[in-house]
Length: 294
Image (cartoon, rainbow, N blue to C red; front, side, top):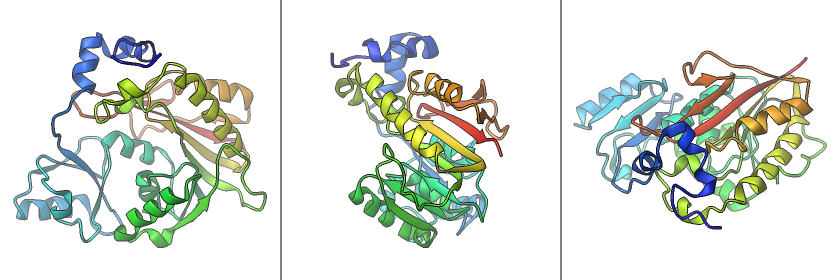
């Protein structure tokens, strides 16, 4: 059965989280133009310096309250004309997505894999702090990632890997200290920006995607180094894709333990990061950080 309204079964769980179906519709089914959220490219400029440049050009911009790299621009007009675009000083990225990227414990010198890298926002975010292997099944999407990374000056920090993460990784691949699995999902956390998903997503998609996500997790844990961290994330608020997926995976892998950093508190509950659509204009995300025993 195709989901044709916020009352359809695949969205039924959301009423427990967000209130009435009318409230969900009001929050997510927006079609009006909205402000644009940016992530500052920390390899080229600080947030304070970019805000100062915006002010000098008369751009209505302010720092985001949670992400330390985030800026919201009230009326950007054509983004290509916005201050700093041609210099690669920023990248468009939802604040909740920025939190997911910040959830990964990245520092220079670590081996980092973004297993499902397209379209590349989180890959570029990670590449500001370490070299990243960006994997994806689609060659065309990897090329688009290259195009996205180049103006930011990050292309040389990203190694492309054309690979289907539902299959075992190449045997010669060295283990990684950090693996990000920004998994394919229903996308139901992004209805605010993609209201058409209400008409395209089918109830049975959730179970199908949960199975696919589990296969990706199983392959990614095989290339995670002892003491390494696997970050699992979906832009969905459906429990089957979020907490139920993670806790079932943990039961099957006693060598892994949930690790909850305090950096994005109070959006941590039961050791997991959850963001919900609402007044902040966020997408709905779920993320969990799993540490492998040494």
